[in-house]
Amino acid sequence: MNAEELANKFKAKIAAAVAERERQTGIANDNAEKRTADIEYCKDAL
Image 1 (tube, one colour):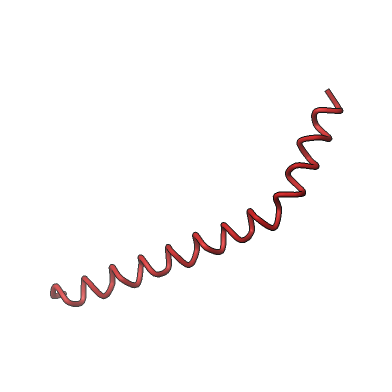
Image 2: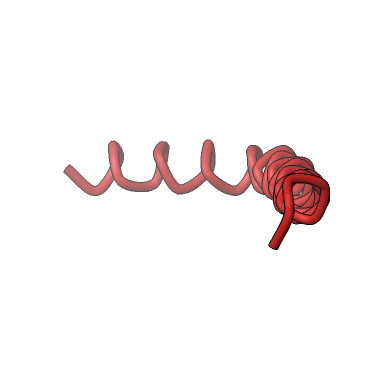
């Protein structure tokens, strides 16, 4: 494997990691209200 192939492989991994981070951020934003409700429920239960 030469340097160019390694660089391309690295770029692909970085692109996949960025896409996954964006996906996870979107999921976290979508679930923010549910987390808040769960926190309040737990506080009330205590």
